[in-house]
Image (cartoon, rainbow, N blue to C red; front, top):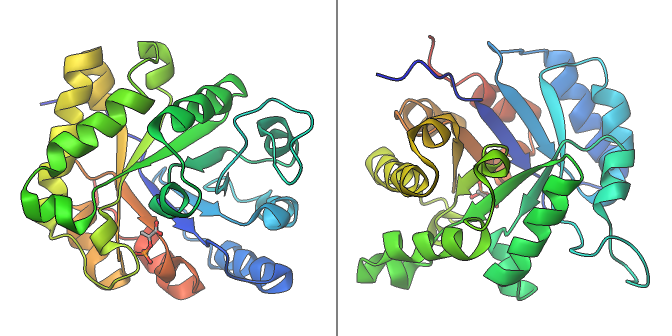
Length: 258
Ligand code: PEP
């Protein structure tokens, strides 16, 4: 039995919700509820323009961290409308969500592009939250494990063991995102164990045991305890239910007692 305590994370992905003032109010409410839970990180994945304002609000709350929802694969220069990792660093982001299925679908983000972005994020000293997961037709065909393995292979397995050890993975079956349908705890556990086994094959047991793997897809206060109680589920990436302070605090408090 391993003695490694993996970093537990409840990460919210606000997506393109909340105007600036509403976003700051939500961040302030989460700070005021002050739920610090046994070393677990609460991560707020906010729109770019909210980053600095939210950073200022969470500055005194050690358990709350800041994530961007994307970044450019380029270092800097003539890329109108893009945001660099240096910019994210300069406003206090700690994490960058990469490869969310909405970006893969609407912005045609490929595994190869995500490999470049991962390198960029790591080089800046930020932590990628790398999203992977299959669509419904792939789940129905029973090929989801191979599909996710290919995503990891093409975007992450070029990394050194040292760099891989810095990343967070989020398994997000597309059929469960924003649909109200949640993967069952057994389905989540089965995929997380399969991902951890792949990491062990590539980088060894120690790296695999230390890798935080989040589940995403209609996580709510009502199902978080059971999902986070699975042995290979180290927390969640949460969309809709992260937009209400009480609900997201309840999800953050869903980690099992030691
Ligand atoms: C997400 O977008 O990452 C997500 C998991 O959304 P939801 O929780 O709303 O399903």
